[in-house]
Structures are given as C-alpha cells and as structure tokens.
Amino acid sequence: MNDDPLALLPELFMLGGAVLGLLTGMFLPRHRQPIVAWICGLALTGGLAAGAFAAARPGGTAFESYVLDPLTHVTRATVMLATLLVVVLASGWARGRRRETEAYVLLLLSALGAVILAGTGDLLVFVAAYLLASIPAYALTGFAKDAPGTEAALKYYLMGAFLGVPMLAGVTLLYGLTGSTTYAALGERLAGVPGAAVACALVALLAGVLFKIGGVPAHFWVPDVAEGAPAAVAAFVTTVPKVGAFVALFRMAGEFFAASAADWRLLLALIATATMTLGNLAAFFQDNVRRLLAYSTISQAGYLLLPVVAAGRGDLAAPALLFYLGAYAVTNVGAFAVVVATGRDSLGGYTGLARRSPGLAASLAVCLFGFIGTPPTAVFVGKLLAFAAAWDAGQAWLAVVAAANTVASVFYYLRWIVPVFRPGDPGNPGNPGNLERPGDPEGSGDPGRPHRAAGPGDPGRPGGSAAGGVSRGAAWVAHVAAAASVLLGVASGLVLARGW
Image 1: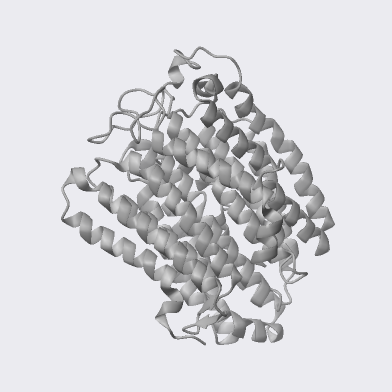
Image 2: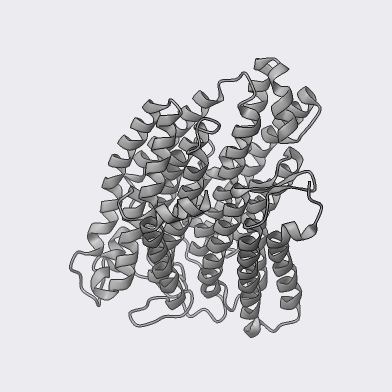
C-alpha cells in the first residue's frame, strides 16, 4: 500500500488546474478568459508528464482504494490527451461567452472523474467518480442554453439519474452480501454467495456502467447529446467518460465478476452483440453527421466490449482494450473536430470538401476509414486485437458477429466519405440549407431546428475562420488526431511491446 500523495500527481495536476482556472477566471475580464484555457492545457500537459513518470515506477495501491497499474497509467494518458484536444476545440466555441471559464473547468473535472473511474478498486470511490464524471457533463451539454442543448441535457441527466439508482442498489447489495466494497475482497467472498443474489447485484451495477459507455439498452442519450450539445462538448462526452467506464468495467470483470457463479460473460456478449448491431443499423439512415457519429460510437462500444468479455482468460484482453480505447479516442475526437472546423451537420454540406480544404478531407477520411478498421489506422489494430482476445477466450461466435458488423458499417461511413471527394461548387457547397447561418455557430443546417445564438465575441463560427470559413484550431485538432491514428497504427507493434 502507498499513502504518498505524489502517487496521485497526475490526478492532482488535473484537480489543481480546475481549481486554479476557476479562481483565476473569477478575477479576469471577459476578453481575457482564454487564459483559463491555457491554465487547463498546461495542467493536462503536466499531468501527462507526471503520468509518464509514474508509469515507470513500481505499481501498487494508493490509500487502499486506488490501483496504480498499466490500466490506470494508460487511462490517464488517453483521457488527458483527449481532453487537451477537446480544450482546443472548445476554446473557439466558448470564447467570449459569459461562462467561458466554467466550460474549461467542467471539462477537467469530468475528465478527472473518468480517470478515477478507471483507477479505483473500491465501489464507493467508483460511485463518487461516476458522479464526478457525469454531473459536469450534464452542465456542459446544456451550456449553450439553447433549445436543442437544453433538451439534450435534460435527457442526459434523467437517464443518468434513472440508471444511477439501480447501480447504487447493486453496490448496496454487493456490500450486504460480502461485507466489503473493495474489489479484492469481493473477489474473495463472492464465490460463497448464492448465484441468484450475485446475478441481481451485477445486473443492477451494470446499469450505471452501460450508461457511461453508451451501450444497449442505456444508449438512448447518445444521439440526442451528440446532436444537441455544442460539437466540442459532443466530442468530449462521447469519448472521455467512455474510456474511464470501459476500464472500470474491465477491472470489475477481472477482479470480482470472475469469482461469481453468474454467467456474466454470456450477458456481456449479448449486450455487445445488441450494441454493435443496433448502432450500425441505426447509423444507416442518418443524414445528420452528428447523429451518424453518435450511432458510430454506440457500435464502437459494442466492439470494445469484446476484450471485457475476455477478461481473465488469456493475456491479450487488457492490451486489446487499452490500445483500442486509445485508438478510438483520437479517431472520435478527430471526426468531431472536422465537424467543428466546417460548421456543417448535414451530409450534403460536405460535398466538395476535398476541393475546398484537402487537409480536412484527408483527416476526415482517415478517421472514418479508421472507424471501419482499415489499415494502417490504429482502430484496425485495436479491432484485430479485440477479435483475437474474444476468440482466445472461447467466444469465437462473438468475434464472427463483430467482424460481420464491421463489414456492414462500411456502407454508412462511405455515405459520408463519397460526397467529400465528389466535385462541388466551392462557392456553394452542398445545399444552401446546409450552410452555416449567422447566429448558428454550430451550423446545424436544419431549418426546422432552433438555432443557437452566437455568444459575444463569437462571429458566427467557433474559433475564428481561416480561408474558406474553416476554424483554424479545430482543423489543427483534426490533423493531429488523424496523424496520431496513423502513427499509432504503424507503430502498434512497438507500442504494445514497450507498454505491456
């Protein structure tokens, strides 16, 4: 056991950045609020450096409830890097708003909750981390105070609260059955507990976890939040909390699910099948790119459940999950960055993008082909590892179902890619209804939907514009994410060899 606070230095950097940013923002005039974004960015950079140093030290447990192992170290790096990219995305959208400081602070606090979700070895800390990851995300979803965002935030909050109740009931039941909330003690004592009672507890506990990962049947909030929230926030809530929740579920599965008599592997395999299949089928019919990405993230959650099903059976499950999560994080943020950069939500609005902005078109193509699982992108390696982990764990049928779903997903990703490289009029890309309107900084392109009012200092497009009306900061994030996806895929052998 390690009671040294420096063992939690990466988390302290995030917490310190949030507190310092909030205090600084209280005394800054509105036009100087972007300083808080720099404070949060520096805190995340410091956390990444501290995390790299911590990963080189011996593992263990901090304060009897926080595990310092590769699962925690990789989650720290993935969450902080993804959050850093989102802070850059959000700096354009939030600039000039009355609550600009609070936007950055809420991002850091929710990201901190995701990291703690992954690292904790105690159900009580897990519940606290669940709330810390969720409550700031609810506020961020409705941050624009417009009709779509408010509706999305309400749905997000109500579903989180509704599914949080059975999760708390499951924690309570597990404590009543075993007399402990630590994962290690649960793993030792659940073997002697009646299987029916354990099954009820695990199903109830899964309700909250499935909400965080956006898995069926707790997925209904994902498309509404992806469409209604500001695009930068949508990128965050469909990426960062998922990373923490998946690692938390994997840790639970390996430490105390496996000790129970309940057939939890079959349950998770069926949930994975339903999640990937429903996500792909629903994405076929989407003309709004944000909703398409939302259902894409749901289907990716199904694939990411494969290593969780394989937890405790073979050595491939953990590296498969961690590598896939890192690949998914950069790819998803990169795809949303293109949406922020162009300011268009309709598929028709991307016609001729390759002619107007070849770099953005290439970045989008890399991200979407990455979601499919096309080499040499990182998601290709992640999917390959996930399928192999499921096969090695005796779940060959699940790997076959996942492969079939991957093939099916090609259709709806091509529906977005093909118009990008189709010739279009640079002066009038797509349908005029898809172009961004004044006072619609997110470019909903839906004439029947209420439009967001631009905040002070927001000229109608987040982050200012470069030539051709493209947000420079968002374009930079898209390019970095696409490059990271390819580099991570190419260097996957080295990464896996050195990291595991």
